[in-house]
Image (tube, rainbow, N blue to C red):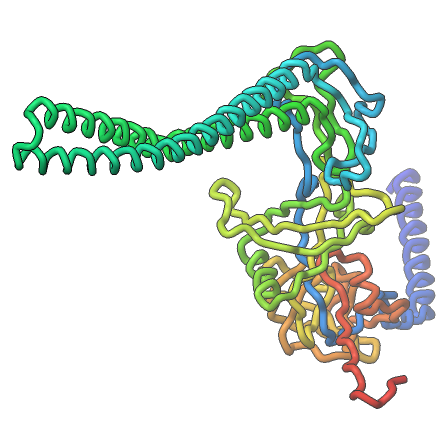
Length: 461
């Protein structure tokens, strides 16, 4: 064996010895190492907000939208034709004007005046014709009186002539007088008799002539009244007190009967037609049938507080075929000094609906699941959550009405619903009540039953 080979073997032996010694050292160190202690992971606790279940009487609020219209609004038109010869300084949009219904002892200055000349002439013409007809009536009365006297005289003459004729007839029969004398007596009698008949016939015509003149007088009096009315129509006033909302004419303009003059709006009372679903309208109809008019709060939109109050006065008898809704009419009285509710305003009406007795309403945020008739909630008891299935009677805005699965006083989880499960530990940081939840609702309100009036003779506190 050469020297080189011996050196190689020596190096290999030394390396093996080093490796073996290192392994022994590491084995010894490993034997000295202790196993780490095992610790259970820390328990996770959630800080949560809960809702305390409460049974209460709640008032359902039925809401809808509508446009305000004036209870009294008229577009006044000319009733006579002619040139507008005078315009009042009050005839401007936005001016408050008094109505023509005021007492005649307080005559109103007209808002405008139409030239009355033609109508005054017609009135004068009818008055002249009436005077002429009444003169004819007086003349006829004189003729009738004269005729009466003439008839009396003619009757006397006829009787005398008849007596003379009878004597002549007897003398002629006794052949005392000649044929010529008898004929002359007969002709004389006929002359008086004919005169009497003529006067009597004239007397029979007087009632018809009197009736004709009477009707002519009535007709002329009617013409005078109509002419007087037309003269009055040339002085134009507002038909009732209100605000001028439109003006269509100017001085010098020629108008015809039916021409638009101005529009006047009375703001004392306004009305809103609110289209509602048939079921909601039926709830209101039940209250109206008992003689109660549900009160209404009115706001400019669904997110603002109400500004005006009104009442439901009537309901349309049929539904709109296009929208399948029924109009409920709300009347609002604009109180003096308050902000008026103006026609044309689009508003939300919040109408008092039925009372839900002893109802259990919970926030919809507390319900898990999208099924319309049931869902799942977490009940918190002694810091631990437990899920429970509830039946949902109905959902109304942010609240859900449940049956008897929940009891008053129980706490429902409102937060961390995406991470908690049955048996999760929680710490209640805050608690919300039913009144706090209802404060942000527009379709539900707490309802407190008014105390009964004390008996007569007993004073209440």
